[in-house]
Image (cartoon, rainbow, N blue to C red):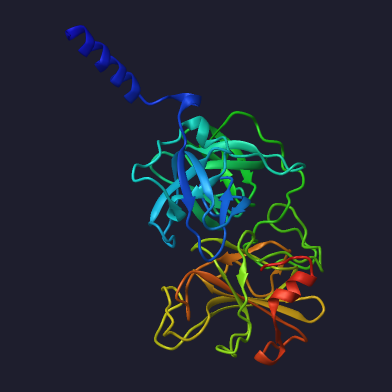
Length: 380
């Protein structure tokens, strides 16, 4: 009898031991994103590359969890946890319905195993190793460059290339090399754990924001000249605009809204010259505070003049734009960050297109959706 009890107990104990390594079972879950598809990304933050979109109700298999960007706009929970799926992509746990028990934490290998970039644009995988202090991403290879955001320790990185800059003493090495991420931002290689050495940045894909105005055709930070007049890109890659231009219920809405998250980089839709960087808000309120539906004005905004008498406006930024009036910008260059300043009830970009400018006015505003579609950069 006692022998039988021992055998049964041993079988139960073996059954309760979780599998490890490659044999670990995934956690089944469902995407909860009723208004728009959820972006599956190359890392645990919205500024990492979008790999694909997952419609509401999509079944996913979660391999593990990693700490990343805090998401406070999800329908399920407010969290900084991101789920690594079995294909290597990441989605915010704020948009996932799953069993009560949280998935296991990702190992160091799993955190760096983000999918590779599209063919023709390989990246080097890395991981932030900054300890308790988030690693700052910047607009150039120096601490004096524009600050973008902080990446928590363990955040997966996709490194496009390396460039020499300010020497930094970090947790892993003392070096003057800075890693240019696939998002266009820079981090010091002194705080990056990686297996291979990234290639040299001989031809950056897009210039980071310059700190001051530059003459037409002059190189911007990172060495890329301001060119490509006529090329159009989405101001918020990976996010879709909702139809909303002069609707019957809101005839004075002369743009479209692209819902996103606070801190998502906003890109110039085409090359041009910055005309205005302005706080537009009702008297008695501040653009540096979260707005509401009862406050008038579009908060912090940037206006850009493009070739052919076209102007674009970008409203509700979280803080003053990172460009200056008179500055030349390239298509896709970061000009500011998503927020909810002014007449806004949630983080989003209000995007306008005007023709026959300057000046801009409600009378020369056109619907951005068909305009961007016909210019090869659909946004909705």
